[in-house]
Length: 425
Image 1 (cartoon, rainbow, N blue to C red):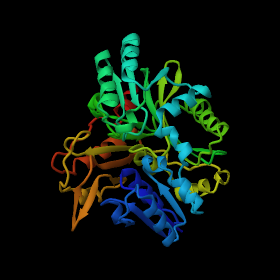
Image 2: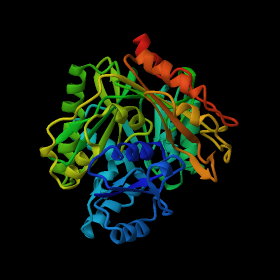
Image 3: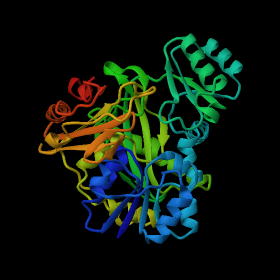
């Protein structure tokens, strides 16, 4: 079969890498792809948000399944358009994608269907938000309603910091129309976990748990990023806790959507805070997480393409369960100088050939491009270096050994990815 993966990041590289292992995939295309993806698939010069161009290509090349990586394309309704043209596609439709595209929609759905989450208030005027923040005090969390590339959430430790976030989102419009509405919510305490499931609205197949590291610096310091590393499985998520999260968060959300007349086919990703009062949903994504995907997929033994194909056809019931490698996996993101702000580009990356010789290590490219025989940086998050080990400690050591062989000007990365799993706190 012929598959088209849409996107250009580390998540998409991991998906292509996994499809490459499928006996069902005869040909893999990626639009637009990156320097790493180009080594294992045919990259097509079509931007991820060029829906008309992607549709034309899928028709012309007789693509059997299109898989969407980025949330912005799902929010724009690419699934609806492909389905109207009788093309198989993996991902939720525009109505279901509101779960990520609108935090207000998501929180109000959670409140209506009793999904445990933080207490919140919605505001469409900054003055009212400021007054509310003065009333409740800090810490609190300020969230832009719309998409903001993973950077639209501010965990404010002081009232002034919270009001500055309101100012930036609603008055300065740093996220454009995504800040027309905001949410101010209570600050939950505990450890976070990423829970991803694949669903066709009727059946649910859970993926392995993971833990992401959002902040730019060690010890969770500095601003939020798209994610600086992840590991799987998340040691804090016991089998009992996993079941509770599925029952109270995942199933209630999917059922709630169905009661609203919304079918969800694709990946539902819950960011969950494990509080002293039990697990609570922080937010939902409607696609594979990045870099969680890079830490989860190397542990998956089952054929991911077959699972996605069944989901797109509403036949997930024929997939009974997934087979997993019991070993641990760690992904460390190597970022460009300046990220998550303005970052440098076009820096030559060295050491990839040395890492390619290591066992149980794979480098997923994110912001890279090919230039002749060279690989250059082209994004904020440049590489996701991923290692597997018998224990989380072994996986951490293997991954950082690989990171040490890679270099490009201005490269920086967190040195504590996975440490919480060892410390148990």
